[in-house]
View 1 (tube, rainbow over the protein chains, first blue to last red):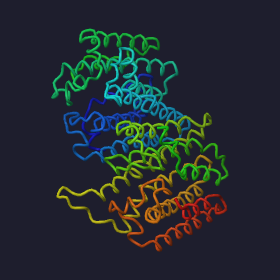
View 2: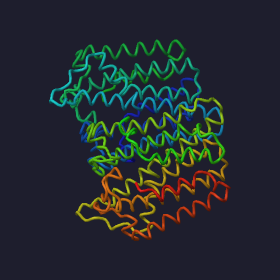
View 3: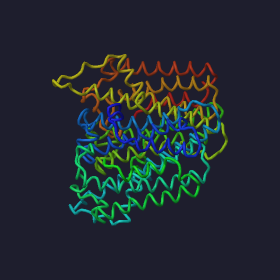
View 4: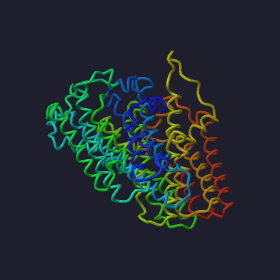
Length: 270
Length: 270
């Protein structure tokens, strides 16, 4: 568990969680347990995704994947342990007996579980898996079209990114209108993140990415550049930022750090 | 997810959860989400335990295991989805904005996550795994002695059984003394359950058990009958019931259904 959590990574989700708490005028410290919990969940999903039975990846964040180091069985258990510990953390901290805080925590646990579960991330992974799994006769399924690709990513990566931002906004004491606007902006960030991920999978080198470049394309997975080309994909990511800014402006949060995070998502090189 | 949850099973953990809520004078309906959540967690643990990389079992509850039906990748994801959904369920229901209920729910989520996580069930599974994993030189680790076997089972099966009972007692509004006594009784139930499981693994037939009999002994896993013999093992299970009765009597809960459940655990034939 420690090996994978401390392997680095961009920490996008916890940063988004803390920035959302701050954006609504809350204390980011109250969102720290949720922020860490979500990073645990993200890390578990990578461990399980990398397993031989799933993507069978041997390199992640520039280091050997956990099952290479510790074996498949312990990698499965480490993922299970991280997912469980995430909820333990959200239930335990911040240690405050204030009743409204307990209600916030229950709400956040529900948001995070929904984003991470079968209706969110896990369901998206199942769809992604189905795209590269031949049927009993050995025939591959037809490739996803643009709408289906977007719907898959909305669950596989978007749902947990949205949950990160929403959880922060809830812990920070945001109004329902603020939480809703931040959730919508985060949905755009999530889409932009995935588009840029696909772009970097083609443009980038393995050393910069810390994972195997060109892997998705080689596996025949549908990607934005494959459907729309590189230039149009980058333009689509920019359009996500515009829509996020519109959502945040409506509740006067366009000056928060959230849009800076959105710009980083689109301009990053790894 | 549905295939494995609806495959049957004894439903011991949810029954214990509901009975604990009732024992402390609460409404068992308030404990139903936690009871179902814990059964989801138990089910996920069986799915992952049965994987080829873990116990590699093909028969469970009289039916093919999930990875046999759906493949390893979907089985991993189904387990992940059930674990996540368990927390979603505890956060969502019962739908009551009463502040004290939110505090109870946070406490229960913490109890369940602790029982299911690395300090509990997942950690116990890792220890169990280490017992049958040769080192780099191919040598098997020394067999567990009685104390180590007990400690392993306290985590692998005991922790979630304790969490089931404690969660029910908390949702039912039990006093700290009641919750503590129920937790101690459930620890005895958990130990008795494991001892009888080991006994039935030797005595039973696969058809009755709904899983492969003799599997643990064949795998060289340490068991109570292997260490103490069948007769002494059954006597140890009976002693667990006596200690459970003592704990429950101290808070005047010996007449609740909890001891009946304990007796069923020891007297069951599958």
